[in-house]
Length: 314
Length: 314
Image (cartoon, rainbow over all chains, first blue to last red; front, top):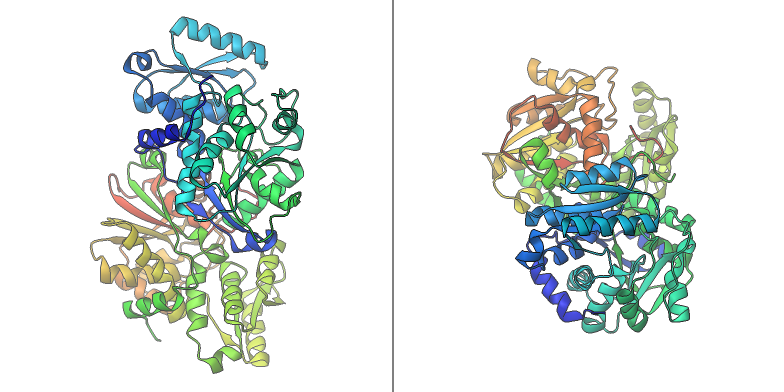
């Protein structure tokens, strides 16, 4: 197991600098009033392909040797990683193969296809996913880029926090969503080196609280039958992400779907930006007040903005 | 009739500098590809109270003498000007009175109330509106701040283009929505002085094409029974705004509601920002290709983002 460190985040920053969007940080007087905190929203919903995932995917794709790259890249994902990897591969001019469940929404299929990926459908089970991916890799010889349990992906995700602390000084806390743990672990690599006084909290859906349980038990608890509107946060932690998270995270706190939806609507209405439920969970955590963060300066990483506008949760 | 000039825009800039948000300019590779242009979206949906209107309203409110200000301010509006004026008055610590039709949507009433304005309801006719306002002004002695036909309001709106041309150089065109003409005329004051090579186009709904007709006939044609989804663009031009527009505008081009909705959805989906139909009309104009703007550098002023999330047009 190759656990990345902050140097790898710096390497990622240099590597992906010309590719990524340097996303802005937004604030809202009204949401500050409501929460009693000073909030700084890092808008990764404005990232290319609509989510922070492009940071990690582009770092992984552009770190490949020419020989590796020629073979193309492959992954299984129905979500933001698939789009991000497809775009990164397109920019490097290499083929990409994406295994998606055959019940994926058309809007997601279209998005991945629009970046030029070849889609291979599988049954909507983990077993079929992995089996199909294996077959694709065997046939094409493509390099598998895991959505989060990959040192280059993690290092790439860590560049979001690196930008954030250069944009906003003296944050008391940073809150990120946690699904597979790529964003959270990348953030921890950066913050544990550059801003040790900033506490990093992972926000996890109540109905998918495997990361919280993993932290409590000290071993990865798999995510079984997760139920939440935050469809980007369904997966289990990986061995690498868990290794970093268990060492450095301040806490993982669960958030109800009700608070996630309330937060999402608040962000849409007051900040005029589109975020997906998996992003809004960070503000949802503050709305539920399970931890007293009054008067603190808090960075929230809004992870993405890919939603189906025909099916909003209100 | 007191027609403002560019010096008044500069005065406005200095006056409202500490009050307003300096809004960012967004770009989208994909929308550039679709339109064949280089587009720069000035995000006034991120302005305080959710629209450019706060620029003009705050300029008008803070330009009042202490004696005038003490009396408070009044207006009739069911839209963004009402919220903007209420917020500006709140920041100056003076009362505001807003006459609204009794069939206004709850979401709009709530927004105006949340900024501390006193709302006076009237019948949903222009006659009742004006009559009620007159009565309010008589009773309270408040200063009437017209939504657009007011030199301070126009000068304030001109600061959006002033920011834009400092953010993005060498624009070939700027497109703004046109309703009463406040934003368009303010933009013209700035551009005609500082960037004479930039052509300014007003985008107007097909079903509310009074400005286009006014420009053609050389006299203000009133907006009678306008029908469009762009509910911020229903009003007639004012004497002051028309005076500026007829002298300096490059063209006024109409846009179908179909193109407005298509553009709105494209902006939401691809740029992850929330804009109202009255903003999306600027991109709608390009989608309809009634004028050849291929390969041009174009600034689009996204005027606001106040929409009812329970009633989206798709």
